[in-house]
Length: 295
Image (cartoon, rainbow, N blue to C red; front, side):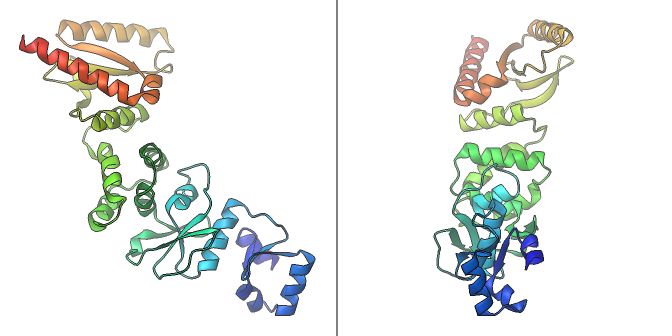
C-alpha cells in the first residue's frame, strides 16, 4: 500500500486495496486507527488527513474512474500556467455523472483523442483543450496570462489550437480563445511580453495593427504606422540601464524625426498598469497625425 500511495500522491482507492489483498475488515481497522483517512467512501488518504493539490487531483480522477481528465482551471494549474489550484477540482468525462462537493464535473462527450494527455502522473486535458475550457469562464487577463506562460514554457502549439477552435463551434470558450490568439498568429511578431501586451491593447481598442519590429530609416522600430508616420517604442529599466543604450535611443529618435517620423515612448510599467489608457492615447496621436498630414 505504501508504494502505491507514493505513486499516487498519497491516495488509494478501495478497489485498489482489495486488489492488494485487503479485506473490508482490514480497511475498517486502518480507518479506525487513522492509517487511512476517508476522502470519500471509496477514496482514502494514506497516513495523513490533508491532501496536497496533486493529491486532490489524483483523488478526483480516481473517483471518476477510467477516462476522467483534470480539466478547466485545474488543468491550467497542473500544466504550470497558473500558480494556484482552485477548489473544487475540475474534471471532464465523456459520460454523464453526478457532481460532488470536492469535484466540479463537466460532461464532455465530444472530447477528441488529441484532447487527452498526461503530466505529472495525472490524466489531464491537453494544453489547447485546457485553454479552450479556461477561456469559457476566465477573465481576459487570466486567459492572456495562461497563454503567455504556455508560450514561454514551449507548450503552446498554434496549429493544435487553431484546429481545435475550428472544430468546436458550439463551445463558449471558442470566441474568447480565438480573439486572445490573434496576436500570436500575425506575421512579424516576436512575442516579447511587452509586444504582446501592446498588440492586445490595440486590438481591444479597435486600432489597426501596426508594423512590428520594422526596419525604418535604418533603425528597428517596435511599432510603426506608415500612413501617419508614427512610431511607438517600448521602454524598460533593463533596456536603459546602460549609458550606451540611452545615447543610441536619442540618436535614433533624432534620425526618425529628420525623416518626418514622430516617436512616442511608453514604459512597460505604464503599459501593464493601464493598457486601455495607453491604447486610447495612441489613438489620439494617430488621429492628430492624420489631421496634420491632411492639412
